[in-house]
Image 1 (cartoon, one colour):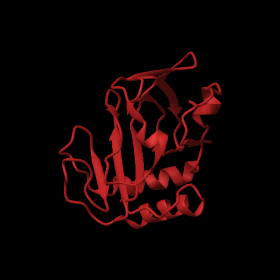
Image 2 (cartoon, helix red, strand yellow):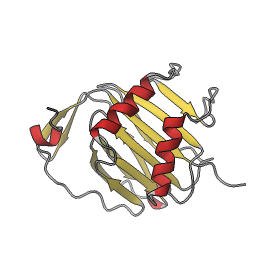
Image 3 (cartoon, rainbow, N blue to C red):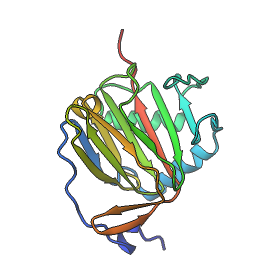
Image 4 (tube, rainbow, N blue to C red):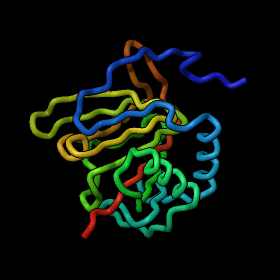
Length: 194
């Protein structure tokens, strides 16, 4: 019988940072949905020209504009679900899958400018701590992204704050040491209207 990480190693409830435009939804997908998504992701080909493996759908992303492919049916269904659930104000036309292994991360950044005001990311397989820094004054915040959780950044959280994941093999959260493991993030965006 499968037991969740919360059951085996309870993670204390900690208040999420008070950042306008940040919304967090724990357990957005079920354990079975997570397994099906990981299987579908692993059946796709990976772009290995970056430090971490990636899959880009619906157009290139960033300065390294690798060729992109249409969003697969599983990605379209997930993006449509997020929109139907009222968590996005318009349908998505771009999806990026990033794979992180222990020791990998991503520098503090704001998402690429050609995209609209909302960025939505689903975490799969493993938790990690994400860091935030307000551009105006350097104020810092952190939060734990649990597996199967959805993080929504819009408005201030999208434009006035940077977010990133430190390069390390463990995270410390609420007095616990959390070992990093393979983690997938599935991030949805919409291109700005002309």
